[in-house]
Structure formats: C-alpha cells, structure tokens
Amino acid sequence: MWHAVGTGLVPTPSPPLSAPRSSPAFAAPQSFAAHLNALRELRDVAAESKRNKKLLATVPDAVEG
Image 1 (cartoon, rainbow, N blue to C red):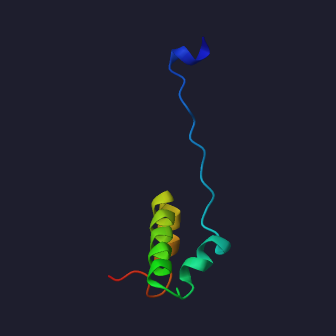
Image 2 (image 1 turned 90 degrees about the vertical axis):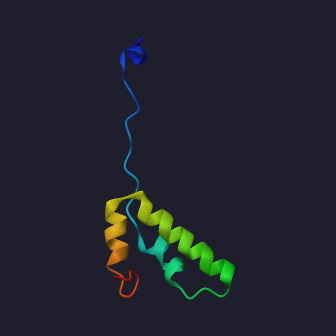
C-alpha cells in the first residue's frame, strides 16, 4: 500500500492576507463585542503566516513597540 511507506500529507499554503479580509478588522468597531471580534480576527490572520504578521506590522500605530 502506498500510504504505508511513510508518505504523509503535503501541507498546502494558505492564501495571503487580502484587503477584503483585513478591511473590516480595521474599521471602527461599534461595540465592545465587535472590537473583540476584530482583534481575534487580526490575531488569527497574524498566526497564519510570517508574511501576514509582517503585513500587519506595517500598519501605522497597529503595533506598539
């Protein structure tokens, strides 16, 4: 059997951060719950790849040093 010889799953790259995905997170949230959801979305986007983390870090005032 071909899968019994150590062939594993091949990871597929996730799509990079896009403007439609990031725009709602940067819009002014109307409530605490919306603000918390936006922060969670940004955290998840940053966790997906180093590229996304670098892109988010380029947003002015998004990262405090």
